Image (cartoon, rainbow, N blue to C red; front, side):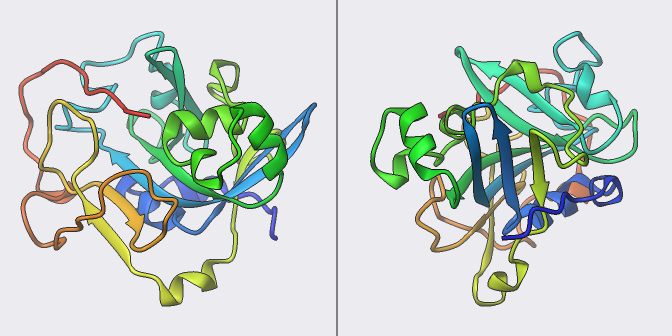
Length: 224
């Protein structure tokens, strides 16, 4: 499996484009315990403008500061004492990111099982909080440079496998606002996808390029 990290240029693009392009890539984690990796099968994009579910919607805070930094950094935040991993995208100052929702375990499966205290493969990294526990990702990695190829990064992976797979799109899961935005991307039919599998045509409803500013509402949650 390729472990070459994706470049800064890869992340410095439209967040929805990056989100789609992350499918099939490999998430890698090196720690004192060992190495784990998994194939990304489900993601969600959070937009820099008009997206009330994005953590940066109301402006910069200490919690979301990483989102305003350079692309290719890890944005790690807590929901109900569980961690979630995002990849920051677009040029510096354009606060947006891609939530990594689920991966298909590849290397270090036994280590993931020990961390999760679960045996079933489907229980290891199917969902953003489970994923972070399986990969030993926490707030200490917030702001980490994913392009370094050390400790935590995303590699090119076997993209050729996507040729026979359908990339599906749907509204995001668990948000309490901006419900109709089609910004969740996943590999249809992959059993490691964490949420519902009822894709909708990309031409329907509102897409990233059709957003209008919306009134501020309470932040959406990210479920396990």
